[in-house]
Image (spheres, rainbow, N blue to C red):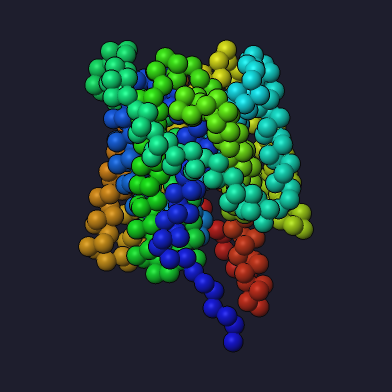
Length: 459
């Protein structure tokens, strides 16, 4: 008798969910938030509520959907193939850009650790070097990636926990309140100024819902774990970033390329600060390494669905997606050169805003499809109603986050999105061929002749 596979319980899935979100998204955020003021805590509260709604809605979709294509599969229930394509396309673009932002954060911390300041062009070249190094290391295959990622994540978790607990003894309420609203923003402007920055920290919450088959009692476990994981991440995010703003003056914090290292140097000693910076460099590189592999996997999934060229499916015997990794890194290198700016913080913010904006498109398409998904899967009306209300709230938050991303991010993100609609038009014949091929292969495996009827494409 085969030994039964041991599945994750709610406690383990909660931890996994929290870790999936944390990665490297937090390490430069204190500097970005300090530029706004401690009023940015309002953005944290709104974003936490919005992220919780998104997490719950994704949990319900992952529990009930019989389409294994992730967010694209959710969107297909309501928006058909065009919606599925746009979801996959914008999510892929978002991750490509996000990884460049992660590499920028890595360069900022590494330069601080080594004690020098990089000019704009050396910063871009160092960012490109980090991207290629991470991509080359993915050639070791998924098993090595998983082992390294599980180790490096503690480089960010331990400093955040320490700061939340020990930072209380160094926290100055006067310093915190004096930095509340240094630019004299209106309430709404102050609330919106850092929405994109705080949402960036939660990107990836949807990845925890990808495989419900690995958990016990998924209909109960997945929603609880995803929401709990999101709240745990929120506590660490809010606790650490708000604590640090009561320890380091806002003007000094806003100009730092390694804010957590600065905080630990102030609390303990410069040597401890350097150790924390080194830990975060390791953690950030581990996150970059893991996400480079993930982007290639997203491209492979899109190619399998007929959305991307089949070259993205080419893999070595160990499962390494050579073409995908190389082509994606070339594109990221070009993005790095296109976003050269006088300050590292400015470069990071531009990439962050654009990544958040493009990532919100698949969120909106997935949320708006939840009603159709639950109807198609015959979800009980009481359960469906609750999930639909939450999805509606998540949609409102996502629209607000789009607005708060700023006009520049909206403009470039809009161009990217509209270009996707144009690309889909050229892809329709390819999708028809992909479906006909899949139908023929399925018929052959069943020993039946393939249907010669034309395949209708739902657009």
